[in-house]
Length: 443
Ligand SMILES: Cc1cc2nc3c(=O)[nH]c(=O)nc-3n(C[C@H](O)[C@H](O)[C@H](O)COP(=O)(O)OP(=O)(O)OC[C@H]3O[C@@H](n4cnc5c(N)ncnc54)[C@H](O)[C@@H]3O)c2cc1C
Image (cartoon, rainbow, N blue to C red):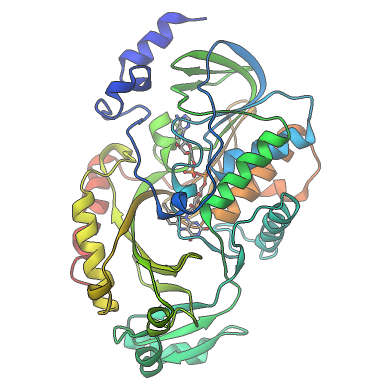
């Protein structure tokens, strides 16, 4: 093993996990971040994620997957299913599914951003549903009555004449009466959405991968991935030589040194009430519409957890140098609280109790980054632009097909690893995206 190279990575700050007491303190301008993460409301409501060991030693493997969220775990499951003879290893820097996969809003829809074939997302959704059914994952997956809530008069005026099949217009007056909000100009009751408990789904992914024999490691960041055949991955406690690699690190991908000019992390904050009484659920119309998307440049989502908590999710903005850590949680809470109360004044009496931070991977033109890089043995699947529950699972499947040589027509969609519009450099990026939270303040 090349000790000096690993020592260099550790010394450069990329390997802070090697000194657990320092984790989070040393995250500088580059390198993998290892700071602690808060808990989302979903983690408390799900069965425990199986605890996994840290990766140690030097090994040669058939497939190494960096990142243990939906994408990485889905790929591990399918790859091992298709090639039981392969050694499949997942390296997760923190706890499994402790980033976006346990922090999202749980809305699932047949949408795959940037894919032109309208039927592909439908197939992706069916794959996810069939995975949930065959693995018997109890994750509250069910249809969700959904409102696209409109904030401008103009949008509300044109909405009735632009309705898609099965959609219905809901007037501002009706909303005032039924959801307890006078904030909106109207809404469109939109079919086709589902709701899932994100962490239960993630635990189901991990258990499925373990059942087929994939090896999962936590607290085991990949400090570097070196191209080549085999590729070489350095971790704080050992190295892997891998014939195939999937980089499934979503918003964290630039900090690993990949796609720095194509992917940028966007920070989000979610804030939830306590479990509401049935009377309160009725007052907010949550017994009628459980999922609500505000149609605006910086979208706000409102939803009901299967456990009866009303929550919202808002965009915070960008943190320097592609950092996935957000320092000002108090500031985030205060903006989120005001935003929530402005729309639903009764929230001021009920209060907001459980808040959590999250980060999504984005590209300039909202298309995913998915496909082979370098010699073709390293794949990446990331940047679902905030709507990735189904696409992450689906891309895990497609990448497993591609790497194991299984015939699958939809692998033709894994072509997005090149050709992305380059993002502006750090200075302009900070200038453009950092103040989003301040922009949100008055609305
Ligand atoms: C607040 C919020 C709301 C959202 N709402 C929705 C929604 O309603 N519907 C929807 O479809 N999508 C939603 N999303 C997006 C969705 O959650 C993500 O697209 C999806 O979880 C991506 O899964 P992933 O496995 O690719 O990435 P992640 O879940 O982010 O997993 C990546 C993993 O890689 C690990 N990692 C990073 N760097 C390294 C390294 N160097 N070595 C090892 N491991 C590393 C991370 O710790 C992490 O666990 C939301 C996301 C957020 C944050």
